Image (tube, rainbow, N blue to C red):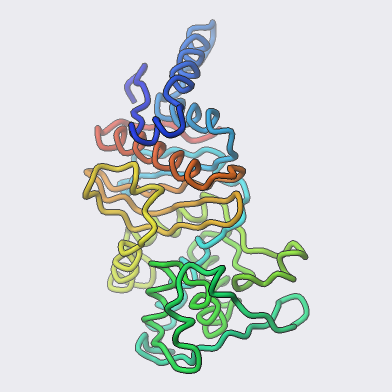
Length: 320
């Protein structure tokens, strides 16, 4: 890292939140601390990202590692968060795993229904199209869609109905086992989406930034199942349609294979950035009422990381 570097923040994002002055003041304060006797200076990347987080007032976890393994940044990377829709990544991985094992074909049809059983007491519940992010699957109720089609809308438009249908078909316990096999124990998938009784009982899908980092690293290194399966999943993730987080902070045209996740006061984004030096970035945000502020924070972090990594800096940003 180059000592004394200042944060590079996406101008549109910084204007919206009015953070530029705050970041500058925080950075100055950190510079003064670094001159104190026996002070150990931190990397500028870590300091700049922490300044952005502090200015936002949110609870944030960040995990970044370049695919060459030489640079990383870990901030509260083992802090637990509600997983929101990031849990759809392991569902996709399990689908491709069962395909590779010959247990199913992605072209197999699946009947579209909208009745599921709560993990609390087995009582039935249904999803509402008004609370979902798309209406594609709902329009097919009573007919069928292929597993491939359901996976596509689960990831690219984050369909909750498609997610629940796939979880029910694949078996949640097998999804959990696959996550453990990938050394991503911080991702805990326990149920489908909108199981209100489970939510009220405190039984929700959760994750930490480290688990998502490991999952996306494996995809980036093409070691999830096999090279062909890994590439197919990366291709689906690149077709993600919600791009206000990580992609919004990157230079135009930068390829990103990522998955977002959001519920009330939760806004996540995690994926692979295919810049001059590809890297995995996970940003988990909790506590902001305005989703656009969380997106702006994620975009600012993404841009700062991109600038540092692309210039070939060497980060020593792991927490002690």
